[in-house]
Image 1 (cartoon, chains in turn red, yellow):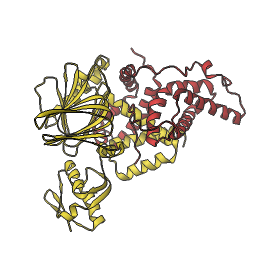
Image 2 (cartoon, helix red, strand yellow; image 1 turned 45 degrees about the vertical axis):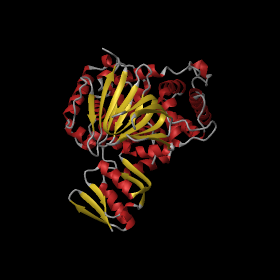
Image 3 (tube, helix red, strand yellow; image 1 turned 60 degrees about the horizontal axis):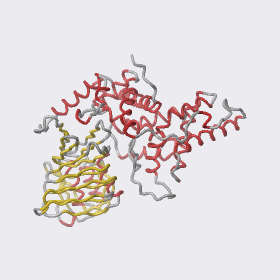
Image 4 (cartoon, chains in turn yellow, red; image 1 turned 90 degrees about the horizontal axis):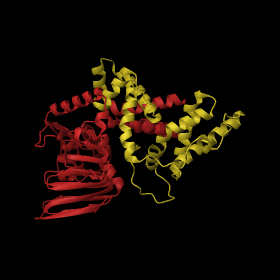
Amino acid sequence: MVKVPEFGREHTGLRKAGEGMTASEADAWFVREILPLEAALMQFLRHNWRDRGDVEDLRQEIYARVYGAAKKEIPQAPKAFLFTTARNLLINLSQKANVIPIDAMADLDALGIELDAPSPDRSVAARQELRRLQDALDQLPPRHREAIILGRIEGLSGREIAHRMGIAETTASQHLKLGMMALTEFYLRDTPRRRT
Amino acid sequence: MNALDIDQAAADWVQRRQFWNWSDDDQAALDVWLAESDRNRVAYLRQNAVWESAGRLVVLKPELEVPARARISPLLMRIAAGVLVAALGAGGIVYTMHPRAAVYSTDIGGRKTLQLADGSRIELNTNTLVSLSKEGDTRKVTLVRGEAYFHIHHDAAHPFVVVAGDYRVTDIGTEFVVRRAPERVEVGLIKGGVRFDAANVQGTPQSALLTPGDVVVADANSMKMSKKPIRDLMTELSWRRGMLVFKDTMLEEAAAQFNRYNREKIVLAGADIARLKINGSFQASSSELFARSVQDLFGLTVTHTGNELVISQ
């Protein structure tokens, strides 16, 4: 069975330097080091790729490549590795399509991405996390939000959620799925909430 | 599949696994999907990670809440309060002397995750009762009975201790499991470090510092330390996803495990049967399914009698 680590859980460091990684170590690394960079990555992609419709696809491809590499060996500088992978992919695609991308692939530092910037202090991050989660939750459409609150906070089962909301189980399942997707997006991209 | 399809599929897997009946076949189908491409896998990791993280929204514990409380919207506060009341009304709840202690329990076969506002997580296994309280700056969990897995967000200013009768586990930044049986306590350390204190082993207090892989078993007469591969410790924690995993496990031990999770008890008729060895993963909640597998595997007979499943020749 595949073990999927949870957010923030750091797996035991049994690996010796230079050794191959197990899937679960790569999983944990990806969740810990790469996902928090999603907002910056999306900004980079939107800035450097003409077709907005492609960016989600690019993001997934970049994640898959970064993850594929991490399965062999964990990159030492995650942020630099992620953005180098992104840049190389964009350059490749541009060459294939025989077009010149907007910024002609300026140096990464010219794009304002600080590759050496230290990560924010973990405890500060933890405190901000709740706030960001709440912001993300508040931005969901009402029915999706309700399903997520009942499921994640009240701990109801799918059947109980359907019952409580007075909807079919398949509808509850849809609300949960779409609510979850939106929550992930709002949370990882840190979209600020407009406070009234 | 395009990007949106993959993200949707990933979110669907996460919610199905979390909210609806989840069989071994479902898990096998998910495993296949995950193995299909790294794109699938990262999409799943992404949805699942945020979902796990969202568990922090359960800000149930006022004294562990730190300053988060002020930031929680009134709606969330009402919901949180509602959950607390519901939990207190859910039966089998004991009020402790400590006015601010909160008590959480699971029934036989139950499981529950407590997500604390400080980022720590406690997962309760079957038939478990814990109370959470604060003693000065110390975050204190009392394990009254059962088994719990702790993933503790270390905070030097707010030490974290688990008390189980005469035994104390003090966290030094950690993932560990504590199991309390009537006469003894068992602690397994997965990550970080803990200090284990036994108040009374043959009349004297004893302590030990545990490093990952260490398992300590203590009762009134002895305190024994041993080392296990982390992988084995994780296998023993399969209950966190509702599974029991056996590797060359004697049927006697496997049956005892199932009996912790189910009201219908497995009874083995005969010492020969008890010594048979079994391998595989089983849903903890189904003694019946397990008994039937054993029946097929070894050509035995299973009979229902009242609240018992008797396995015999």
